[in-house]
Image 1 (cartoon, rainbow over the protein chains, first blue to last red):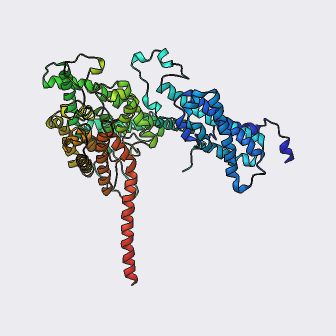
Image 2: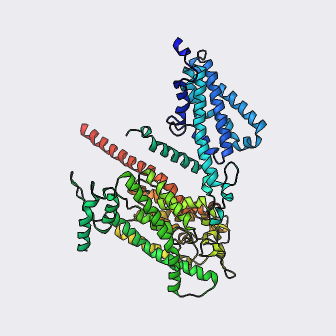
Image 3: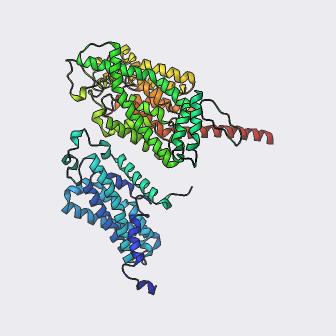
Length: 217
Length: 391
């Protein structure tokens, strides 16, 4: 125990907690968690970025809180305790968005509230925060939030560009004058199934680059 | 023929593993077996081998599609000259339409086969000939005015997302041609619906004579104008606006006959699709509250893509049900869904595409229950037999 306390704040082990979820341990493409919100909020970049930030904040702070009280939580009611912590955080984030970013909050509508049921959160609390100290838990939360967010932003980038012809609201396609050549926005990009296909393509891409992720038959 | 065979045999060693063009052996094999029956011999156990292989099967389907294709070419010309109010001979109409359809077919084959060849190279397996039929089906279910780049995109989507990701020919869940159409339908609805896209030239703002309407019978029905639709005979022969190959029920029935006689297409599926459509149509007639629901049932068979879907799409041996009893259920449900979506859902004037795609998903489930029920029946019989023995 004592030599662990001497561990530097940004040791290689701690840094790995942050980088692993970005790549080979990604919550969406490898663990396939939190898919529903990834489909719902990725039509445009702005809500996707806000959603990514919200989830990152909620998972990081809840991780710290749970890690801090992990020794005092009775095992039999731990899920309820975890849910209370998450719900508190989600309500705080929701109220904050309503106060300072009302239009985005309206676009995200129910999905901010649904962060409570996002599997990534429960997964991190159960698998990591219940067995680790607050600082590593914080890094783990940031890493998983970022891993979730990066996929959201990639998907939203392509869906907004190909579906609406804009990037973060800026009409790129119109500016480069591609419409006069007969090009048209792809209506299917705006529909949820295309997000599923986009996530699938990212998984395909990732697996073909990192063959160790492919399951053995 | 013999000299061709000799030439192929001469260059063949270059295309075997380790040869000069060893990497291109899947391409070579694909082309070789297109010309000659593959000389494959099985080594383990005994297999019953038919002289008809996958390529021959596909060729028969293409022959069955020819009447619809040829009539489609004629009808394209007919609709075009009708819209500008000009007179033209039959041959002139046919030639005009043929020249308009040709680019669609070329693009569809070039993109689809290109991807198949590349996929075969990457995966190191033989080229699958599944695209031979898909490549001709895709243009036949498109409106004539579809931009070529959209067709190319949809074909690429259908082959990659609809087929290759599942493992290539024989592994696809959905009918690839319908996947292409569904992709376009949801991506660029303006090019797949309405009353302009079905006649050549209308979307380019071409001059049309007064009183001409390019609306399909289904669109007229969906708008509640059931009295304006063409006569039954016109729709049966197919001189109406619509996707290229779907308008003529007569041509499609000739194709159906070829498929059934050669045993390539399942007559059970074709018959049960029509039976399902008949049942649903009669049901709607019985509870009719508007003029579309009152429409006589047999009209549904000659409008839109119902016949084409039943004969060429639902009978796809890969995405359809495999078990004999399953085929009846599968086809019957397609018929029901098609008419139901067509008449009840105002957002989709045509329901055949969605009905078949939907039932593609259910086909494995139908097969599973058919097989399970058969297993249970036999188990029961076996139990009674052993009980009798024990007594």
